[in-house]
Length: 310
Image (tube, rainbow, N blue to C red):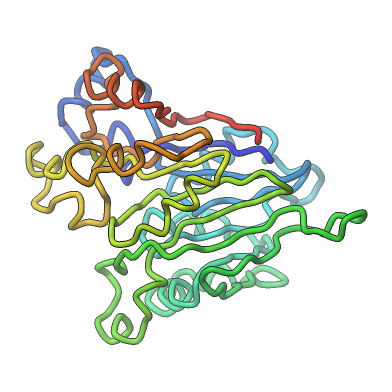
């Protein structure tokens, strides 16, 4: 299974178009030891010629073009992208679906609640129905394994299995109160467990901190791509770019009591990678003490183009 990070930043990317925080300003000026990053996007390819997108970022078109193996193989239209798996209905998770509207049949896997939000609250996504056949939505229950891809002819096993794990988050602010009241809370934010044979990856770009279930999957996985959005609980407030804490907007910070570094300081056997990194996060500065603390703790920091074979 090949896992490729097409985008590694949080919403807005890095640098963010309208942000003059220290990190963004220094990167533009060439004074920051760091890399520009697009918005978080991962693609998983269990075998040659078939890949699955984990979410659909606003930068998706450019991200697809950056990976030659995602190019069409034959005329007139073709793609190795077999489906999209959504972890939430957040704008940064679903906006890129509009880039996939070019009359290409598509399979989209999500909780029933996320599907209801995307199609019910945002009629623009009906453009995905123009394909022949139209986009197919699959409502996936929580905590069950479901197959992706064609079964192996010798073993009868699917090429890839997936499981949606509830993480205890909240639905996006744009969801109407009437719809919100009808949705089960557990389907708002999920992590994705992807398994092929004995190998396993776990993807959770948002860890709200309301459930510990993710820890078991992180410990048992060969590769973990986890929420690295904020270093500090009050990072946005301190930077003067927001009024809410990290946890108030659905992200456990990396540092402090109950932070991700403390919560995951033992038991994770595989590679540990931070993704969905906000432009204000000091770990983006590769000369900072925060960057060194993260690296000394055994974590890697995702960048666009990073690849893993597991």
